[in-house]
Amino acid sequence: MRSEIVDKIKNEAIGAFWLAVLCGGFFCLSKCVYASETVKCKRPRWKVVYVEELGCKMRFNHYLLYKTSRRPATYDIDDKGFCWVKTGTWHVKASQGILTTHDKNQLQIDHILPFSYFARRIDCAQVDDYFNFVRNLEVVEAKYNRHKSDKICENKDDCKKQKEICAIMAETFNNEHLCDDL
Image (cartoon, rainbow, N blue to C red; front, side, top):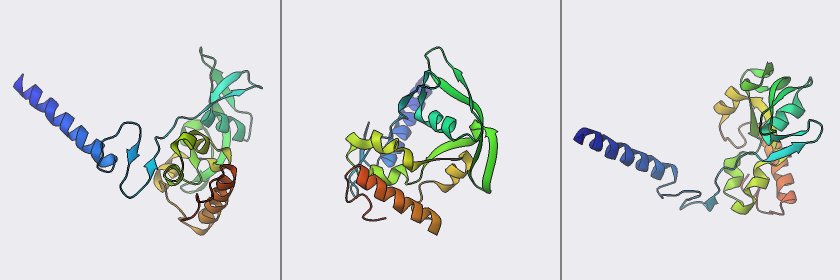
């Protein structure tokens, strides 16, 4: 019994330590405040959109998969009225150039201008609008997305695209300082 209690205390202490590390040394629940940064917003969920032509609701990431498929995507409707993309054909940016796939599980929706970049430069009340801004989203290979992480201006082409998107977002959301350090 005593060893179970000791193990539980150790596990909770380790969890609290990593929570503090992840939040820059401060304990937090919905937001982390960094000494060198402004407020970092909590990562939102994909918004839900109603897709009239299908007669169902979709999470925004599935809607983008549905709309970007080169051939009509197939989908299932669950008992709550949500559509989930099953199959399609996508040509996407990948770790080895361009990938053509029929497997949606190989894909992710990526922010061209990383979420970590704009989340520190906006009012958290606007985070859902920025997160779901369609012109800042692209379908990519999941492996590629995990590998590249949240890099800013990693290469000339990405940098040009990120700067263009940032300018559009700055104008759309009336945030003249969004791109100051890009």
